[in-house]
Structures are given as structure tokens and as C-alpha cells.
Image (cartoon, rainbow, N blue to C red; front, side, top):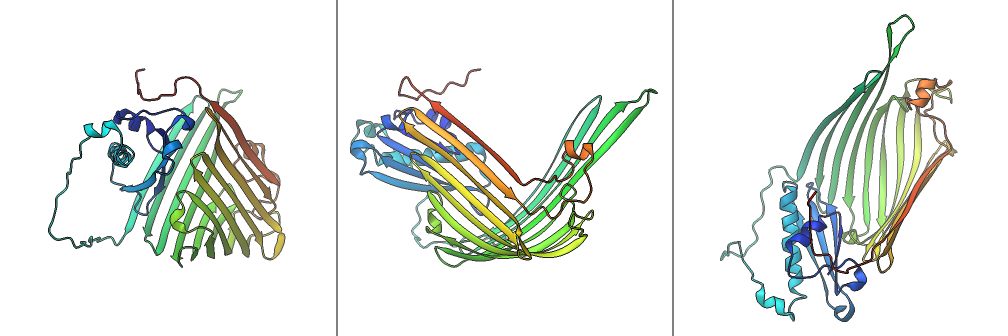
Length: 387
């Protein structure tokens, strides 16, 4: 079997299942197991196990799904995974001699009452989480203190998705300089950001969703004292939403109405303003046995002046080209013509070097490319963690 474990602990699976042979490359396998993970509304993980027969058993394939709840530890989640992999393998071992050495143990209870029992949920599917952390570092000439926190609330059902996300971070940097008279000068630089986003989305079937966002933010780096607005949106999915773990193409349009209050007067001589902005988002994601392709395109433009616009696009590809050889590459590019919040006046050297304030630019980009080539023994059964 070739184990294609995307986001899970493949080494543990190989170490716990000793009645089959794992191979390094898909072309050497009789069976390809593709495992993908998606986060559930309650914060757990839904595992989809696609057992894909190859060669002479290419007509034998099936899929298993199970959910590991948020309360599971990593050890509990990986043991659930191993158990379901073993269950899925039985279908392919029916004509193998190893089947006579396998046993089935039932750990549940059998009840004469076969009616489904409705679970009682006093929280009505709501999930809440609070996080906070801090980082600090320093030396004789400088010190850095960072603090961040967040609060999340969400209720996700088949028909509704309601979320609230708040995050805040504060960064204080101190630089110490020895003066000629022996005294020490301290220069202190502080950046702070806050973001609050709420989402309400209503399912309109297998392909359509109607909803909207509400947003509030402040950022010393982006010269925003306070901005707030709402974005009614509609989304279309080319494929049924239930197929998202293997293929997804979605298109969303929204209209953002926002009020902006600035820390300093902007380059457009504004201290505050109300703006309408079009938002168009395209997303495509395919997870296949040969690899995966992910791409996105976000476009936005202000109604009062369409020349104030932004275009973000990017992609990521990982692909098996031939036996033992895989390639991966990604890229992103942004055309930026909407920096309406830039503060008037020149930046100081400190603001420029420490990125304390947003700097004017008409584009940004990034990317990476690489390959991996494996050769040698086709088997991959032994796990050795020494050293």
C-alpha cells in the first residue's frame, strides 16, 4: 500500500499496522490510501480515507469517514485513524491468506431499542475559545515584547454558519544607544492591531450560499484609528459543497460599505470617509491521488473611483511526475492601487526600516519551487526514532 497522508501522522500509521507492506512510491503499490482532513464546526477534524485500488484491483475502491472531536488528544486522534485504516483494509484482504490471522473485537453494546436517540446539546452547537500568548527577547542593546490574544465563537450546522473572531496584538521594541557622555538613550517603538470579524451564512442548497460579513479594525501600522463596515455576499460553488475534500471551485461577490477614521491625515487629504467597495473572490482546490492544485484570485475596487483597486492571485501545485519524482511550486502576485490610508508626509528612517507604518507600493510578489527524488528499496515499513 502507498500511504498518502495529507495532514496526518503517517509514521504512526505505518508503525501500528504490520500485516501489509508500505511502499515508497505510488507506482509500486496495489492500493493507494489518500487521507485528507477538514475542520468541523465544533473544532474537531473530519478524516476522509479514500482507498483506491490500482492495477489488477483498480475496480475495487471505497471511502470511509470519521470525526475526531476537539476533545481528542493527538494520541486519541491518531489511534482512531489507525483503527479506521485497519477496518478499510479488510475489504482488500478478503482473498489474502493474512485474513485468517485477523480478529474482529466489538467494544460497544447491543440494545433492543434500535431507534436513534437525539443528543441533548445545552450549547446549541456553539463553540467558544479564548487564547493569549506573549513573546519576549532581548540583549544589551535592544529588547522586544509582544503580546497577542484572540476570542472565537462559532455555530456551524448543515444550514447555517455563524462565526465571530476577534484578535489583538501589541508589539513594543526598545533600542538602547550609548551616548558620548556615558548615558544611555532609549528609543521605543510600538505597533498595535485589532480585528473583529463576524460572518453569517445561510445554505441555499448544494451550490449556493447567501450571507455577509461585518468587520471592525484598527491598526497603527496602516494609519487606521477605527474602521467598521458590512459586506452582504453571495457565493456559488460549481461542485456540491459535500465534495469539498476532493474538489472545490467557488465564486463569491460582496459589497463592502465601510467608515474609515484615520490616525493621521492621508495622502488624499482625508481624516475620515465612507466608502463602498466591490469584492470578488475565486477559489479552486483539487486533491487527487497524483497530488494537489490550489489557486485563488481576489479582486476589489472602490465604487467612487475604480482606479483605486487591488488584485491578488496565487497558486500552489504539488505533483508526482513519475516514479520517485515529485515537484512542487507556488507563487503569488498582487497589483496594489488602493492604499488610501497612507499617511501624508515622509516616513522617518525608523518607520521605514522597522516597518512601523505602511509603505507605498504598486505590487508585491513571492514564490518557491522545488523537487524531491527517491530511489532504492520500494518498501517503507520500519519506523526507527533513535537519536
